[in-house]
Image (cartoon, rainbow, N blue to C red):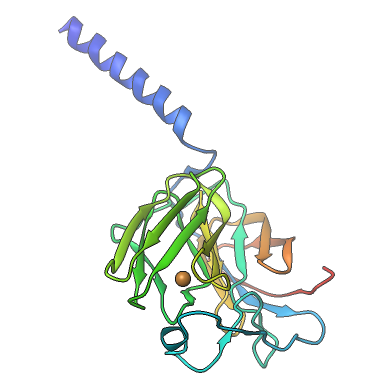
Length: 245
Ligand SMILES: [Cu+2]
């Protein structure tokens, strides 16, 4: 009996030690009176015209979704909303960060990455699809996570890739098609969103309180906003970013 108790105590100590070494500051709790944060991120000033990319290779496949590829680096809707902006509430506790049981899809289609900005919980497996049937070369430029560079030949429809550590943004490039670029955001807490084509986002179940919110866009950089989340209420915001902000 005594040895069993000692054994249990030792196991617990080992687990505590292990988790202290591998987890981060975020604490999962039950959220019963959470509020939400929703709104739009708009371009400050006159929106730039979408940049067209010159396709210099594999023209027949790369043009399959249309004769031209629009550079995804900065896309502003007719209403001024910015697509692919990351909105990250800097929460230290709240609902659990749930790693998806199914892989998260990241496609290469018409020599474009879909989506341009992919946000997911740290620990997720990314399923990198090759819908083009040509050689792509996925170059994931992690700093906290290992940098990795893998050719994906035309016959290889899928590569699965686990991103263990929180880190954002992680630049992703194709070494075969220099215009292909994207970002992966591996998050250490669940209160994040990426804006849609109209610049809209919504984040739910946030514990009431005051927060800083990081707003990031690949071309425009990062800025910090402040919000107050009230119990069971939606806090609506309209933020802007520009070349100089
Ligand atoms: Cu490619």
